Image (tube, rainbow, N blue to C red; front, top):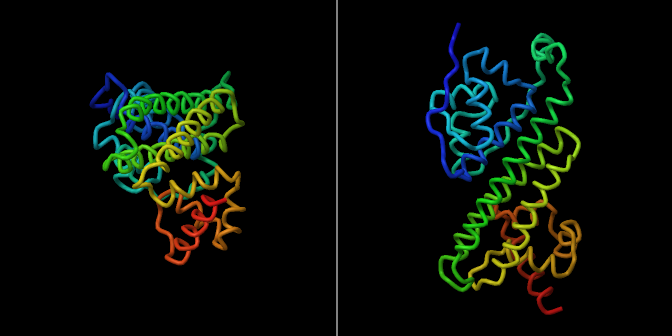
Length: 262
């Protein structure tokens, strides 16, 4: 019988990157209907170590991460990239075979909906914990007119976007529970406040200025896209600091100027 590996390092103060990676792994595991029992039985990681990782309290060994990535159908190195806050292309989930579904069925006396609710609640708690750790980083930001403000704020905003994606994915797995509402609210309130603050910097990005202008005019993404005669994808990409075609950049810049005048 194989012995599942434990984690190599336990963190004292929670590392936001570990929390982010753990929460994403938990969401992906539930998305694929993979139980903690299965991972332990297959010698990948024991239940205690998995729970600690998914809560952001510990970091698995490299070999364990590789095994997790394989069973989660993620490209090698995905968990490390999640910790660093780098963008990761989503992997399309595969439908489990009937035999696998049978093997993953709850044991006698175990309620499937209860297991899912507990898992979603775990993700929600991890997201809230991660968001709270960003409060210190946000408070430590220099004045908005500092040369390094925009770069530091943009990195935090990217982390908040990833956390929101984790919480949103959990919401799609199960009904939007009170803990999940709290998690989504915590992420979005920090994101909104920091985006509006970042937009006041003389070095603000187009995405930050566009977000603030759109919010000030009470425009939705669809309305903003129509006003600038660009696609909704262009608006989302700009606000997410993703590449946008040059014509769309010009159109969005013009719109930001128009909204500032009105």
